[in-house]
Length: 131
Length: 275
Image 1 (tube, one colour):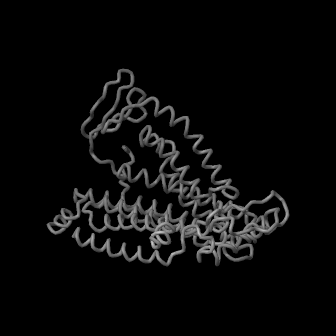
Image 2 (tube, each protein chain N blue to C red):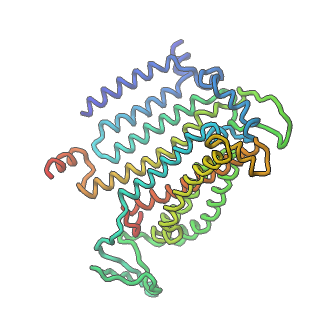
Image 3 (cartoon, each protein chain N blue to C red):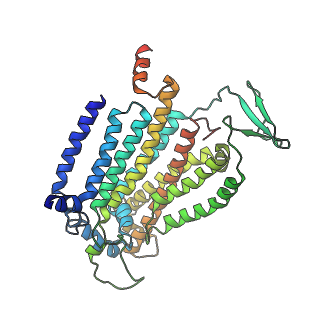
């Protein structure tokens, strides 16, 4: 019971992301269809993005936009009031890059389908061997 | 194969779950990630760059070099989609036309086709999409507002959540809405392929150009302080303006690449019939 309280309740977010990540990994390894593998890859990426963003959170912290008065003078900024901005910066670019790479992957899948008329991995392997 | 995959997944998942034992608990203000570098950015970025949104300041200024190459990666993805899929010679296929006055559908086999300037006939997709008055009208009304909001997100990224990446994606979505609600030809007529290619390169060029311009003015690459020599503002404000210029470049590049990827993937590179 003590273990549950200290580890599961305080860190259930990490447990959820790891489960999500493993769903993606399983789809990438075990699924036969290339599009399903790609969807698995996207789930994996989403889990990592969620993981990074949740690392940056602080209890009672607000978005990392510093309060200020326009043209006002200097005043002390308390960093514990704002969540950590660095994971947000890294994931902001990662989201857009993952969308673009997903587009390229879909383009490759379309090319494979045009040439071999299938996206199933086992059929694809036999057709590559035949040709 | 599936059993093996399940075994690998359970093993690595179990190891990762075991590793969470050493993680800081959720929302801990004293976690290692939040104690070393990030307080410095939070305390100093307003003073050093005059940008209250720390995410924007770190993205476009402190980590500007990294973001430039992220933009290049997106540009490369657009080019890769274009190179893989785009076909220029029209394939022989059956064409379908709707006779506008009577509503009859015409099916033409072989190479003959009705010129696209014809007022009486309108080309329709082979997989017939119903003409929906409500969707067409609403999307036509919404597009300018979506674009206005996207420009706001780019321009106001210094003071509110937003920036080039987000605004660029919304701008791209406004054109993709046209392609989904009408058809791909309408969207390509509004935002042509040539201008799309030029803009995706232009965005990266603006980003790299601002960096090179700083170098010409005598500072390091992407050190926006140098822009104070030509702008009527101080060195701190110059960094804020440099960030805005760079974000505009990112927005243009992301918008053009999103549209390029959608058009190529949706029409398999033929640019005539989309989803």
